[in-house]
Image 1 (cartoon, helix red, strand yellow):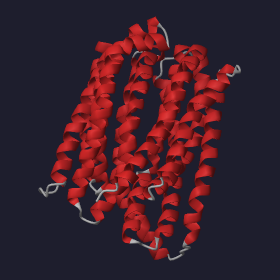
Image 2 (cartoon, rainbow, N blue to C red):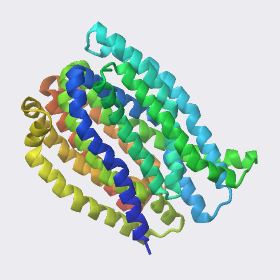
Image 3 (cartoon, helix red, strand yellow):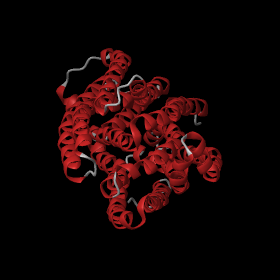
Image 4 (tube, rainbow, N blue to C red):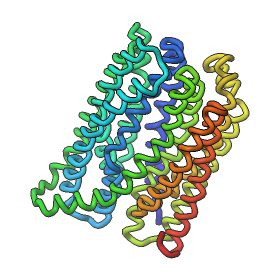
Length: 432
């Protein structure tokens, strides 16, 4: 029997952890936009996006840790503390490599591709240089959160996620309110926030690590092999998935300029926040999918997936419909009429894509938790090969509206194929 009370409580914790930052963002974004102006705020969204994207250098090991910890618990494996040590070392090292790569990639993008004045370039290069230092903190946080979620400790993992989101919006807002409008100072505040959260996370995980000290190198290497085997294909998805979410922004900024970017990123950031609902559900469902797989209980896995679809349809369907009808009016109330006229229709298009993106969380979690990470990775690779050429062709012709349409069409395609693959996986059809 599926313990719905535990899963639903976990989903609610996750929803709380991602919902509170949304409320803080609703307050802080108009203040940041007014204080920084369209161009600087657009550049700040690029920094936020880059920090989030380069978190992919955890190489899928955060999710792998969740899956492996859940499996170890199901099998009552006593080597779980060794697994945790292995995982944390594994996510920290590539995080350092990610910081170096982000630094040089950002230098090239700002100097060669971004359409901004020389004065803004100087401040942005400095900001991105320091933002790169946060990448090891991002990957380490991913591993630590994966451990907590593997233990289904969603209260603490959600608290950390929520606190990070709150600090991500509130510290820049506080800085601009007291007169510090430099992107460099904003980035420093983001780094300090992540340092604090890593310390708090380690405080909660250390007792588990110390519980069963193991020094056997064979066990260490065995855990590393299992994590990397799962994480290898997860890395492909972790690179391509966030890239497809972020690529449109960088392409718009390089082709149309940073000022127009704001009319796209603000509504996109807001509608993407609706994904806190399916993310809360799928995050709680993921370790349970993994444990059901270990026990070969396909019927319970199907019921769990159906329950997830039902929740998303019931909650997100009416919400997306309401926001689509009143998007322009709500943007006018929230920011101003000029902004609403430019961004209202963009929000409607993106809401369609977000609804299908929400549904895709369930089959994605099911496939990955049951080890079908190669299937999801190859699907994302095919999508990327279609998505990027379409963006480069249509953005110069149709502007940000074309980018929104292409983004939404991609999410619909993603859901359709994930649903089909998960159906095949759960009905004993030939393996993909």
